[in-house]
Amino acid sequence: MRVEAPFKVGDRVRHPVFGDGLILEVSPRGEDLALRVSFSKDGVQRKVLAKASRVEKLAASEEGRR
Image (cartoon, rainbow, N blue to C red):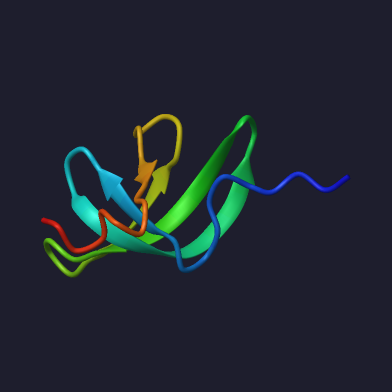
């Protein structure tokens, strides 16, 4: 049985500081995932750790609200 990763390329996410963004790359980092995300708030790509930075995946109904 294959377990799906909580984040994948193309997912829309929300970061508590940087706002909403689009995942461009996902790579494992120990017990966490390193995400390269393009954030719409400032147009900058940033690398963040999913658990450490409390990134949340947006549901389809939440995309574009902010």
